[in-house]
Length: 441
Image (cartoon, rainbow, N blue to C red):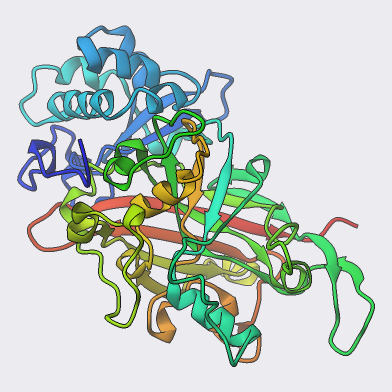
């Protein structure tokens, strides 16, 4: 495979599974999706192992591998995916990934002769405990939304909101992989240095401007040799799949520390990802052209290819919701804060990989790239409270008498993502849930 994945039989919108829940309208995990996760039975001491979502069930890939139903690349990939992390499968590359996907698709397809044996490998998703899908060696967070960069820059530099390098280079920083957790993560409000208005000496206190960031995560599959770069035409061959990502941010700590070297303690206390990794093949029907404003400079040659121009962007719908502690006590559903689409991103996932390696940096299986906050061109598409509240100056009503400028203790943020258009099967990412606990004394 070179460039974006092309449609194949596994994307057929007419395909149906023998599992009824996979055929329900609005299902996140139809047979055309088949995302990967790592799980075990809830409240058990079972070994963690890889699984694939289908309808409201999980295909236990360790159990499936023991049945020896498949051969060659598919068998090798399923055995690798049955381990306690997906790194072994990730590093085997797209030939094996696609073989596993096709084998699972055929086995789950309505009328498959493998139905009796595969049914014994199912576990209800509601009975599962999820872990990080991979051992994440390194984590890099990018700044790929020009709408977010301009909005935030306007608050800090009203006369010069977008720095001159932004339109030429995918800006990123190296994060902290040790603080990445899977959906359900609860974390304590971070302490740190912040400079109070009108003061000349900082104080160390819990953050008062805690925020979320609506992002996608990009899991690296097969890596590259140190000292070599990954050409943009080959970049997607090195991407195992995408997940949802919330990069929690302490804006007051960030404002004080970010110059001259960028984010540090304001970002490394917690990052939460969804358990499910959606493959690029599942997203093939939702590829769209990579568009830039006519006034924007063309990307440099190493960040440009015909395939990236033709179909480098992906129309992934994204939304952020909030549920306060009081809302949970009243059994009220979360309140939607904003919604947008990944097709607005100024940089594509292939460009992120190509730029990350242009200097010879080696990526490894399981490495994670964040896209940065995804915001659209209108106010209702902002991907953070910093933007929605205009730097904390305009409170947002969320329920009854409650409002927010930034997050309070007990608040939970839920991010959701999906792809949907006429003539295709809906492809969902599930959701990522995280909750703020009070600061430690």
